[in-house]
Amino acid sequence: MLGLVLLLVGGAAAGCGGRATTHHKPGTTHEQATGTAGTLLDTRDGAGHRLREIPAEGAPEIQLAARPDSEDGWNLRLTVKNFRFTPDSTGGAALPGAGHAHLELDGRTLARLYGPWFHLPAAQVPEGAHTLTVRLYADDHTAWAVAGMPVEAATGLTAAAGAGPSTGAAPGADHSPAPPASPEAQVPSPEARADRRVTLAVRDGKVTPAPGRTEVKRGERVALRVTSDRADTLHVHGYDKELALPAGQEATLVLTADRTGLFEVETHESHLVLTQLLVR
Image 1 (cartoon, rainbow, N blue to C red):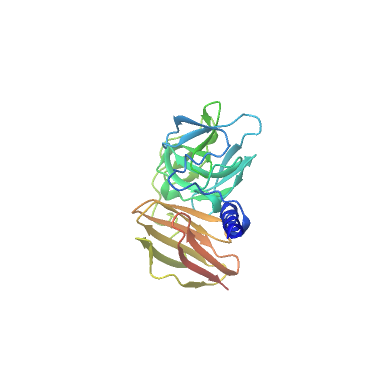
Image 2 (spheres, rainbow, N blue to C red):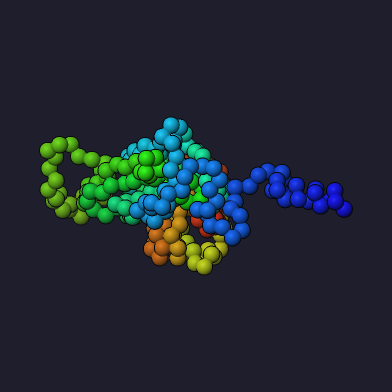
């Protein structure tokens, strides 16, 4: 009996399959599951997350670049050093050099980022000049910090009326409004040029209509129109396309189905499969 008890205790300590887990202990918060990674500070970032101080040597680093997408909005690229994205362990303990990122527009959080690429639709960026910021977080949602400052990067972004997205203007450029285009010269929106439109809704953890397959031909443009009752992020597997879903607002992602196969469209936060794109 004593041997059996010791065996059970040893198995519980190792976790499922003999692997150590990164989840916090019952009765503690994410921020209290500190492990030995850095020092938890009382200081908080603009989003209300506590900072986790680590030495400058070997600390994570991040750079942000934005370039206009040929169909809609911008493609953002995150270049990291001494850091890896770990979406599977989000909500666990803070492990050195691991976690995710947050994307902010003028200090307002748009989405969590779980990889180096993210698509930002033009519809989510009002006209004018803005600042995009990405900040690195540990799996327990504390912000990595060096010398009391969050590990982050920022870049300017300008959404020009009637002229499409821009990531900057040359010195001395004319910022006066462009004259209105004639009806014959107006260019239809990316959604208007789509060959297929798929409208989906997420409410109380359920998807409407029920998840199924959406068959499209290779080369067709597909517009995914999604409304979620909670803030989330849409992800199209295989195409590396993501879309921030503001709570209660319709958001649209337009992509060209230039790869054949079966690709899942899901949400990051609620882990729901919305549909499957079957491209032939």
